[in-house]
Length: 114
Image (cartoon, rainbow, N blue to C red; front, side):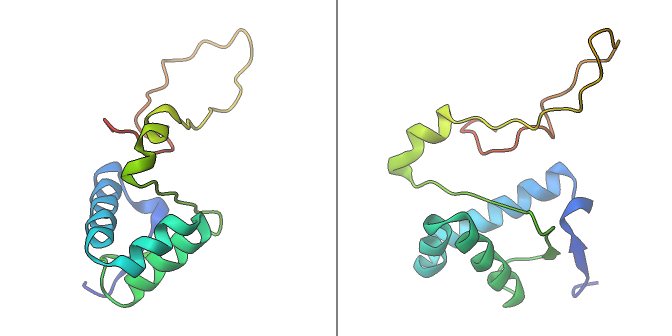
């Protein structure tokens, strides 16, 4: 189904990783797209949605209204390795017995070794 539209929340980590790779590859060869990605989170989202609509990045994906993505260039790469964003879990209570929460799926930013 080449025209199937996939909801972002339905993608697994491997599919998201492939999608990120496709975005980065496209940004390396299309200056206007790259500039939009570096301009702001909002500008990046608009550029990504347009590239999807134009068939430059596949698959066709719809994002939740609060979807946000940020980019840094090589000169700012030092910051990208020191800025870490983690999705904090729901509070379970002081005496809750819980299993360890894996980092996979809860890292919410790009990290050099991710």
